[in-house]
Length: 474
Image 1 (cartoon, rainbow, N blue to C red):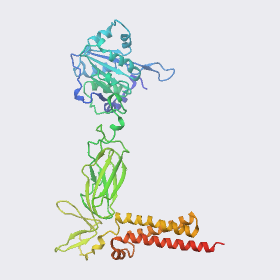
Image 2 (cartoon, rainbow, N blue to C red):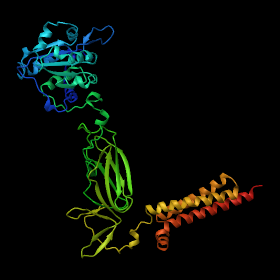
Image 3 (cartoon, helix red, strand yellow):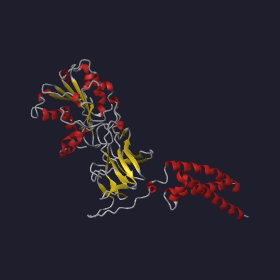
Image 4 (spheres, rainbow, N blue to C red):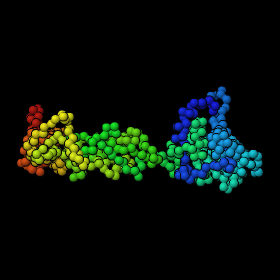
């Protein structure tokens, strides 16, 4: 570490960081903190613990005894703003308090200054926290009843318990003993630093849990927008099947009022209103914002929401996903077109899915049959078909055992049955050749019958091949 007098320009570079780091730990509301005035006598007790930068280096004080006092005099004393009086500011090493605590009838300059002090400022590093806490608990021996005490913690502020903290007028966490941070702490005493920092570690005495505090604030709704922040999409609320939509959150803040850190998981959900089918995707935050892209698989009214921890979206995005859009041609004749989407704004806007030349002639296409807009399978078909496949497993096991008298033989026929059934279901569900005809003939049970029939064919074929293998064996 650099000696105190050699920091030079480093202090100016680090001062903005130090200002943001200074944290008011107690009380929570900065408006409740009083400030010293020009008529107040201020006593500063500084922990001057020494260290060696190397085995042969001289011992140096991490914090000079008069560091805070000289800063207060320079900024706010007679040659500064005049808010304080230089002659009423005194500074002593904190280890001198040990002599007072061990003396039955203390005297001397320190005892005299403490007796007349309106404010006592304790500048404490980790090693001296026990000594400072003992002084604080026995404060009535040295201080006037109305004297106010400020504790500036240069290390981790975790040693004080709730009883000791209750004796303080203000409790600051500075988290460093370097000159820029001490300068910022002196300014904080007079209210010249915006106290927006938050503790970087848990403090049990203050009931502060850093993990909980840095989670998304559940009192704030997670707002959602379409498109990116640099290229927002048009406010289109009607989209076609097969389109993709980019969704991003608004900035997400934690319980401390800061943007959440990078990597916080956010779950996006796209849910169809009619049957409750939901698509969920988890993305991580970057600069307080999470983004995802949904592919719209089928038609229907959808709602998009997001959640992270206990925070969630209170006003989901609502979109209409259409198979085709209806457009009124000049002349008043409506027609169907799969190349446009209608925006839900006061002035209807047609958004082309491909680049549109300057002059376009719209040609009415013949109306599509109603069946073309109807999906071949739905969630009920899937579960019923799955049930049919499970039922078919039992005759497959019986056929395999009767043929081979082995588990391997039974398993082979079961796999043949399941693969064939799933192949038939997928072929039908994707609209393969003839699928629409099967739907027209069989109606609502088409998907189940296709799956079970395909499974039966797979069972028969696998059984037949196993019979041939048995005949070839010697």
